[in-house]
Amino acid sequence: MGRIDDIANRYVADWAALSPTGATYVGISGHDDKLDDLSPEGYAAQAELTRRALADLDATEPETEGEHIARDAMQERLGLELTRYDTGETTSEVSVITSGLHSIRMVFDLMPTEGEQAQANIAARLSLFPATLESYKTTLREALAAGHVSSRVQLVEVAKQCDSWVDPDGDNVFHGLVERLSADGALAAELRRGAAAATAATAEFGQFLRTELAPRGRDKQAAGRERYELASQYFLGARIDLDETYAWAFAELARLEADMRTVSAEIAGPGATIDEAVVALDADPARTIRGKEAFRDWMQALADKAISDLHGTHFDIPEQVRRIECMLAPTSDGGIYYTGPSEDFTRPGRMWWAVPHGITDFSTWREVTTVYHEGVPGHHLQIGQTAVRAELLNRWQRLLCWVSGHGEGWALYAERLMDELGYLEDPGDKLGMLDGQALRAARVIVDIGMHLELEIPKDNPFDFHPGERWTPELGWDFMRAHCRVPDEMLRFELNRYLGWPGQAPSYKVGERIWLQAREDAKSRKGADFDLREFHRQALDLGALGLDPLRRALARL
Image 1 (cartoon, one colour):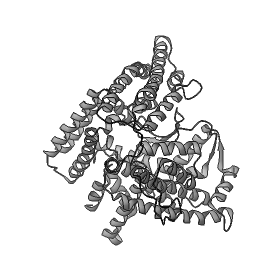
Image 2: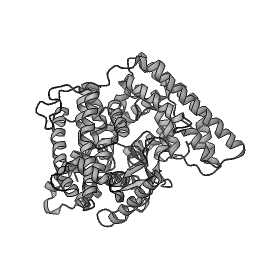
Image 3: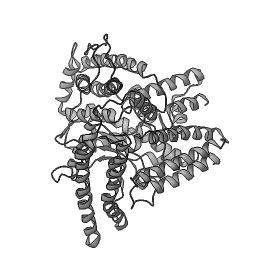
Image 4: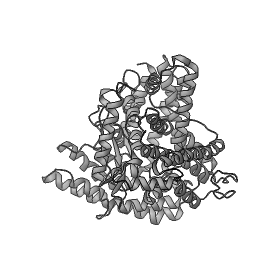
């Protein structure tokens, strides 16, 4: 390890002390009894750490190609994080998917629960919850005074999430957590007190959002071009032409739907529509699983099979990554997500499903491709392989670097790759993959269109409201017309796009850049190109912005 790696490793140690919840997320031990300081001073301390690291990086020349890549990646990420802080984005961001509240609520999902010390850590964090949220209120108030605030709709929706999380007949997250523990005596009493305090604080925070912040929230959910350009660059690690990408997404969605009609004819007969094929698949009892626990077990079996099949054939999967856990999230917010392993791999990578209330039946044809996206060869392989490569990557690269366009783009590329490798020969599973791809293409259109308030092309291939300007209402109509997603989940999806500008397109745009990187490698290497070797070399670079990725791959 050289001087760039020393800077990176020192940054991780200092960062973990400032972000105890972040340390838990990435599996750094020793901080599990503390919560982040969400006060203005706490955010400022993290920003100052970032400034110092950037100054050190600017003053240090890389000694090797590996350090060149590491410095490029770290300057790109930390630079954008600092810009987001300086422009007020970091301290004001409240949406249905991300906020200071979400980070301290979700950390309990990843904490160890076995043993007295682990349970004492949970009790300590629960007891800190009220004061932490009070500090966070101060940050949000100061951001508001400086002219930075989320939209009124997002603030109200997060208030509703707070209501659901503390509802004894709903998610009941804190009391539910404590009830699952085996503590007794004084520790059990401390846990119950902590759960009651965290529950009351969350309910009160919801009221704060609803009555104090929301009335002063932005009327428009649209980000506008300036804010959106920064958000897009942050999530992609690349600058793109937003107008070209918007036009491309219309053509890509039309291509995908043409492919879906072809597959639908295989499922429901010549001339069958996509919707008729969907009805046939949903009516097939062999493709339906009842009960979320049974669905979790099905996902686990498929994820395990993918690891077994792909190791030694198309990928060399490190031993530490040959285990994944499929989990049911304690909330009903909707969506599937992945959390990486701990640094020492005692906590494995996990695929989580936050099942909305009322959903009890699951169609497997829709989710085969999801397992490949979240598991292997998707997130689990990508993130796990990065965590293993201590001989190639410094600690910041292994634990802290995450770029949505790189990670989500790879996972979407992995879905398409599994089709190329023959794992989606079943027409139903193939339709599920294409439907997922269509969802990601549709949200490129909707996300860019709504946030930039663009005109819908007069000659768009779907004849959808030609010449009108995008609104959230038109976004809802378009998504419903082009996605086979239950309304409960689709509503969360649309709220997510509106509150997290630039993130939703990172999947499909990231995949587009990954595919181009593969084609570029084929052109450079000709007959010497080897797909397995391309994947190994690309993943061994670790996570990095897509512009730094293209530069690094061009030098291989």
